[in-house]
Structure formats: C-alpha cells, structure tokens
Length: 230
Image (cartoon, rainbow, N blue to C red; front, top):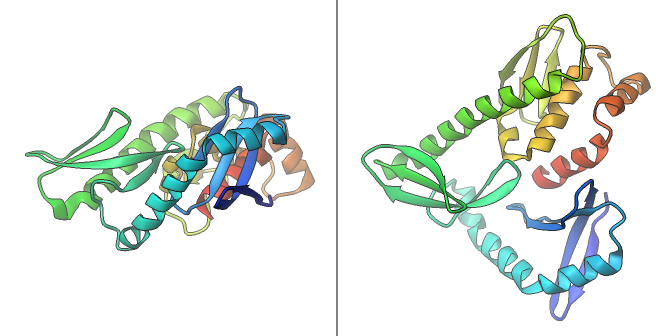
C-alpha cells in the first residue's frame, strides 16, 4: 500500500488509507509516526480530505507529542505520559505510587500502580502477557468454530522477531504476545491464518483460496498489521 500526501496550510504529512467494512471513520497516529485513516468501503477522497482538514491541528499535536517521546521510548522508560498500544488503540500511561503493583484501565488511560518505579516495565510487561493469554484463548475459541477439524492444536505464545504466528505441524499454534497490541480483528486474522495451515501447509493458491473463504477481508487486515508495526 502506497502512502498519500496530505497538505493543509503549513502541515504536510504522509498517510495511509485502510478501507474496511465499518460505518465510522477513524484516524490514528501510531508511535512509529505512521498516520492511518480507517474508513468505510468506497469512502470518497473528497470526504477524506474534508475529514483530514478538520483534524489538522490534532494530527500536528499527535505527531509532535510522539516525536518528543521518541528518545524516551528508545530508553524504554515507563513513565506517565508515554503512549502504549493495546488491542489496536493507543493509551496514555499514568504511573501512580501504591503499596501493591497493579494495572487497570481508568477513563481511557492505562493506570500502572507501582511500589517500585524501577519495576514499571516488568509490571506492564506482565500485564500484557496476562491479557494476551486471556484474549488469545477467547479469540481462538471463536475462530475455531469456522473449522471442522477432528484435532485441535494446542495454542501457545512465543516471542518472535518477524512473525505474528507460527504453525508447528498439527500439534501447536504459536502466537507472538506482541499481537495483543493489535486489534481483535488482527488477532482473528493471524489465528485464522495459522489454522488454515492445518489443511494447507504452504502458501499455495489453494491455501489463499481457503483463507479467503474463512476470512474474506484478510488482505485489508494484513495491511493494517504491516502499517502499524513496520
């Protein structure tokens, strides 16, 4: 997918358009500074331009804020004001001193309560893993209903450098825990992708035909994953 250029006054940014089966329009500036506009199918360029003009000041602020945070992000500091992804959306982190370590959502923020500021990353990483285990199991159960396999492979998590999931023969499917930062739709796509390998072990035309029958808009969702994390 090629980026498009948005110009308005002294503002100039590249952005990507992802058309989906949705009724509303959403604009997101990701921590990697990619700007992605999610809109309904057949949404006109005129409507897109009008929407972007209305959001011009918001875009400028988001880009400036995330650019300013880049040095801290490289140092992996987990402090109030940082922006973190969870299930496809960005959330500001609020760090509070507390007797017990805990992570919660409060008013659209990730609130990290910590008894030791030096363990903030450890606390948040543990929370991400716990959420990944819960959400992956839930989505796996849902996506399995599309298949009539007589054997259900084990679901497990493993950190992987360049892959979101992996199919190990017919015994196990692995999901990258980082996938918890993507939307549920993206998680569903990766799970379906790997489950389709139960029938077709390689990426042959037959495989993609089977994948399309189970997840018709997989290409759009794959684009979303690539835009967000690459």
